[in-house]
Amino acid sequence: QVQLVESGGGSVQAGGSLRLSCTASGRIYRNDVMGWYRQGPGKQRELAATINRGDRTNYADSVKGRFTISRDNAKNTVYLQMNSLKPEDTAVYYCNALVLTTDLTRLEVWGQGTLVTVSS
Image (cartoon, rainbow, N blue to C red; front, side, top):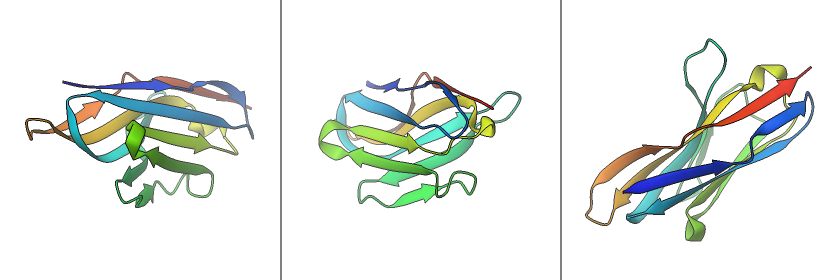
C-alpha cells in the first residue's frame, strides 16, 4: 500500500558530508512522522532522527549538532543532511514513516535501507 524509496548513501571520509533522501508513495492520506534509523555492524537498530508534520524534530544524542532532518510534505519526502561524519556513523540507514492510508489505516513503513560507510 505504501512504499519508501531511499537514496543518497555511499562512502565518505571522516569529516565529510552526505545527504539521504526518502520518498513515500502509495495510498497515503496523511504522512505523520518520518524519520531515519540506523544499524551499525554488530549493533541493534537505533533512532537517528525523526520529524513530524509540524517540523518538530528529535535527534539521538550521538548525532545532535551534526545531522539535520527536514521534510517536504508536498513531496512526502524526508531528508537527512549528515555533516562532520565519523567512522562510528557507518551503518545501514533506514527510512521510517508513520502514515494514515486512504482507508484510514495507520501503518508503520520501512525502507529497504541505504549503506553509509565512513572511513578514517
